[in-house]
Length: 142
Image (cartoon, rainbow, N blue to C red; front, side, top):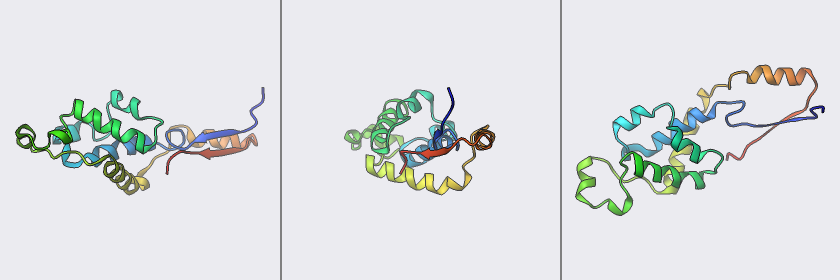
């Protein structure tokens, strides 16, 4: 069979936006996660969390990320925000889903200039172009 065209998903195939997305998620939590968690996951999220987020739109993955952080990182549940145990931790409740998503977008947009290409992306695109194979990019990102 002959390849007639190639359609790329922009995120994670040509550009390594996944690393920046992970960093933006951690930053979006702000003071609702401990310094230790921020440092441990400053570059990459744990796979157990990441695999639940991949391929989803922000309004779908944001509540999953918040729930994961509540279950695994000690993030205060909004319902527990008035309890004494939450105030002794020094952590604040996480933002709402919409605010969390908005903060993620702000942090991600601020890092866009530091995005790097995925290994081999340039060579692949150049080889496809040399073969005259049409290419296009698709994304569900906003």
